[in-house]
Length: 342
Image 1 (cartoon, helix red, strand yellow):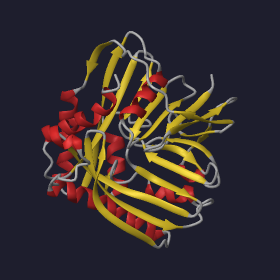
Image 2: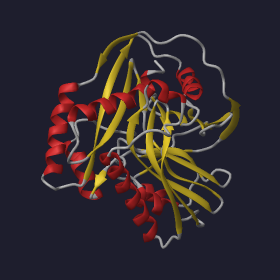
Image 3: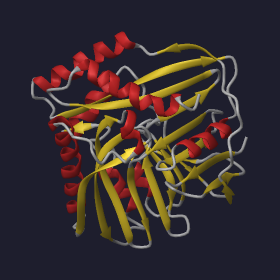
Image 4: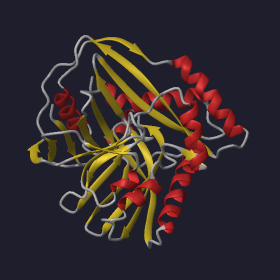
């Protein structure tokens, strides 16, 4: 089968189809190995032999108009949200925060929707493009026959030429009623959300300083993503990154927005204790150094499409004052981005 990636940039009026017409994508063991390479990247939260960093070769690149999705939805037969399992994981993760092991840690979960037949994945992509103009939308077909669909607001790294940008995106609130008519400009942020976003911004600033990069930080400001809003700070800088992009990505990824602080300790705790296998959720994907342009986005609001299942992923950043029911409802709100397509 042809391995492909179909994506649309935020507010884009067209999408791009990248096809690898023969062989399998390059499999890499680390994002460091992306130095000097080009193609469409699909990176996991944690690279392993089963879930490596994949680089889809651009044998054929096409610009396509954004199509109108056809009517019709799949017949979902069963839905499993694993509420009790989440409660156990929350208690385990939160105890580490109250004991002072971490300042922040991210807990992910997965919900499974079973269906008699899988809908046309490209129709789901078109529907996502129509519903979520502010987000990066990508559909990736992998060699194992499964697909990943993401609709994400979070830039990990993007640039054209020597102009580059990354963002610190964290904190989540759900818009309701009349708030949905605006961009969330009247939202009042809690101390917990402000602190969570500040952790991410401080971490990114420290990463750029390691590379002796002069950067500008703007924000934080409120940005809308579907029915949710987040706090975002923008970091812009100039640098020729062609041969150093892998090294910078290795430092940035995973950011505290999907991992925690201290990063290494939180990362290891997640791998050892999180009940969900994240696979490519909370990794990143996008075109790398194609026509001197890079657009890499953190893989949030994901759906893994396989066999007769849609597996929906979401996570939330926990702090010592986090409350389990509130965190559960935040993940439910995030999963609505994909559920609404079904």
